[in-house]
Image (cartoon, rainbow, N blue to C red; front, side, top):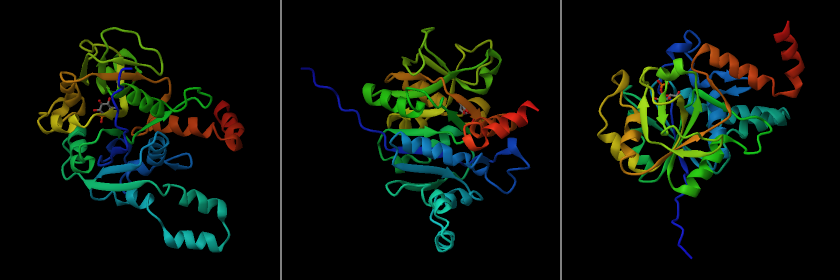
Length: 300
Ligand code: G1P
């Protein structure tokens, strides 16, 4: 029988949170954009829950000064917990205590200079310590259909890593005019099914619609081999004068395969007003207690 290569499980996730949130000003003047609530919890809590549900055990925030409230949100708050306990407010207490299960470690690392997503990821190199890792962008809410038989897209993509040992990048189809806002994956014209992965031929960061090789946009969920860190060390500044993760991943393709994993989930970029509003409505409609109220409000 052929010996199956063992694929190292991905346990660590980098979440870059050093962005200034300028697209959401003035809301984000004093509050990190990652802490703006989507319905009943900060957008970043949704993203951390998504990572944990897929088996991640260590969350590494790449952060900056002025964003300490993010770390506080994921830390214990003894006075609050004590008071809620004394007043017998068990349900609320549970929502506070359950934010981070006991087996999860949270680490934070500073990014002193905003040199791009690739640079933010590289800041976590020592903490990643030669292991494969995940990257989740905190602005993006990935909302899988509640009755989706495949479960959560990110957990499903983790299974694709486990089966193939190849890095995976989650993609979605976008309108041709929107390609210039994203990293775009070229899969040599092959048609991918939802929740399946197809080998990537090339990756381009923010191409013009005329130059884009496809409309498959990188949406902000990655499962990557450790080698990416070495490549990032020598990746020059690219689109927008920033060190781009997409460029390092394009170089990685010369050494090993990467898969484009197509999701059918609805995604919302909560870093802009439209996506943020959409996320709140979409999540609100999932709560049975408020669904009728919200539907009525919208139809009026
Ligand atoms: C980043 C990535 C880009 C990706 C996008 C998803 O760009 O560089 O490849 O498609 O996130 O939101 P940014 O939105 O930070 O400019």
